[in-house]
Length: 246
View 1: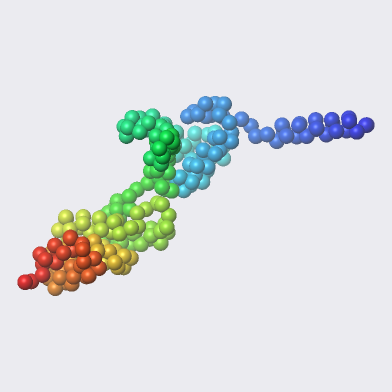
View 2 (view 1 turned 45 degrees about the horizontal axis):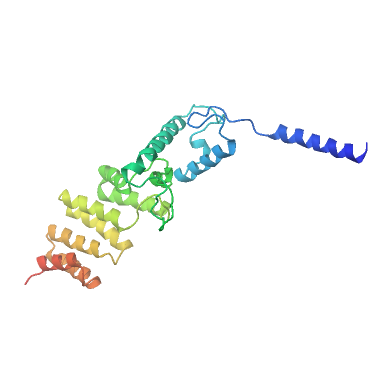
C-alpha cells in the first residue's frame, strides 16, 4: 500500500472512530428546542449546579432523560418562570435590555435580566436566615434560634447563601422586642456583639432591651458605649438622653 493510500485509510478510520465516540443527541428537551446543541445544554446545567449549590443527581437519575424526579419537573417550571420575569422586567424597571446599570455614556451596557443565582445564592431552596432562626425558635426559644445561626455560620460563612452581617441578629432582636420579650432580645444582641463588638446599632438596641427589662443602669451603660463608639450617632445620643438620669 503506497503512502497516499495509507494516509487516506488512516483518515477514514479516524473519522469512523470519532463518529463512534460522539455522544448521542439530547432527548426529552422540553424547555429548549429539541435541536439545542449538547454543549449549550451542558453549559447551562453547570450554571444551575453553581447557582443552587447542587450536583447533577439533585434533579437527574442515571437515565438523564427521565422525568422521574420531582426536582427536575419543578426545575422546568422555574426556568419558564425566570424567562417570563425577564420578558417583563425591562418594562417594569423602565430599563430595556441593553441599558444596563454599568453602561457608560454612549455604551449599551448589559441586558437587564434575572439569573437563577440572583434568588438561590448557592442554595437549592433559598430561605432567609431569620426565617430559619424563627422556625428553630418556635421549638426551643432564642437558644435554639442562636444554635441554628451558629451552625449555619460555621458551615456557610464567607459564602453567598445567608446574610451573616449584623442585620440578621438585629432583626431577631427587634422581633423579640415587638413581642415584648426583652430577655430574648438581649440573647440575640449579646451574640451579635460577640461577632460585631463595634456595632453601634446593637449597643443602642441592647440599651432599649435593658431598659424594657427594668435594668436602668445597664441601659445607660449600653447607650454610653454606643455614643463612645460613634459620638455623632443621633440614635445613640437620643437613647442616652431619654434614659440617663438628669
